[in-house]
Length: 488
Ligand code: FAD
Image: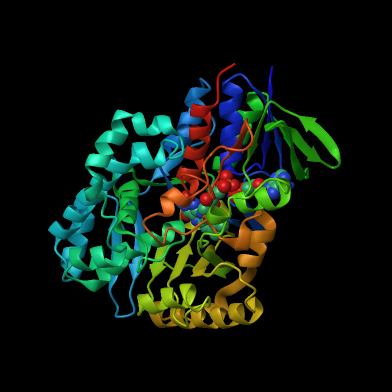
């Protein structure tokens, strides 16, 4: 059986290993850490469990697909529930909104509590669906870098409908014109942050993202987000895939423009195919040193990063749900701080994820596990210790203002993740969560392809390459590789 080596056991690396095994390859996964999942891992501290990275699960069909491809029932490996309430939104002026997954109920909630009309929400989500229908087969599910993709009938149809994807104005401009209440345009501007971008610069095409949530749904795996990884690793192991942990790859080797394997711990491992799940920046910098680098692609602006406080909280807060957003009063100045000043606003939007609302075992009795995250710039050598200390005070003051409670007294456990530790733990250049930002309309074309045009049989998957960051797109990168590798 021909050998396939996968470098990195992030979600896309695991998915690639499964797909290549099903294609007839003997897959071997090298992982630098002692655990699989990369960003999609968990943290345990003082009796609390936290999902360390992703907290929102959308498009579960891309995970299920891996089980069905292998002839297995996804339910035998992992289960997830559809959320009736996607998020709770809190504004400084006292407005509180529940984003129900039922669009009629959500639209009514908005009409009842704000100046926006229910019809505006429905029209907006219809447009979101249109962007999805024009783009998904071309921009998300196929390689943008293969000539044959452009000969496809779906591509031709999409080119004729290009005007409908709203690529020539910013997301904020589109959203301001869509809603009669600026708090609702703020709510939908927030979706730019789902791929680490700035709604005041990113094209309105990013309004595709609400369609993922309001059409396909938002979900929570029964054992938390980390159980997605555990289930996929179990499937992989059932298929005979071998994982080598604490086994960092130091070089990709090749000869005559064809990849031949990798080096790890000074030992050569030969393979027919190599797939790198690393951030593409580090793939070139560390593993492909002697090959010319695609500088234009690698020097694109990085996506934002995050500062996360994992707080074990004593007491319970019934006004909060699984996903909560406490909005900045001046949203634009928050993004100016991140993108222009490379700093953190004094009034950042706070995201709080509390899985113990659904999974009781995630916190001791009478307590809650709070994942408290704000968006911050990618690591550019800022004085993070000072920024983190200031941000913590600003977060606590905002929680105090909005929840009318002194949360600082309830914190009984604290772990912190910042751009520096995201970079060192997951190998993400500058601690960016999603590879490059999507702050201009050409960004989709400026992500690296899923294959090398210099070395035959070298492929790239994961959130830093096409089609982009986030679990669903990282999984699609593995699918695109699958579509382009020949079967044995
Ligand atoms: P990564 O997770 O980047 O893993 C790469 C792996 O490669 C790591 O395990 C690393 O140890 C390994 N590696 C690195 N170098 C080497 C080497 N030399 N040799 C061997 N192995 C190596 N997405 C969502 O869909 N929803 C969310 O709510 C969401 N929220 C997020 C919140 C945070 C705080 C973070 C950090 C990310 C979030 N994301 C979210 C993004 C999502 O986590 C990523 O897009 C996705 O997990 C990336 O997966 P990946 O396959 O690219 O691999």
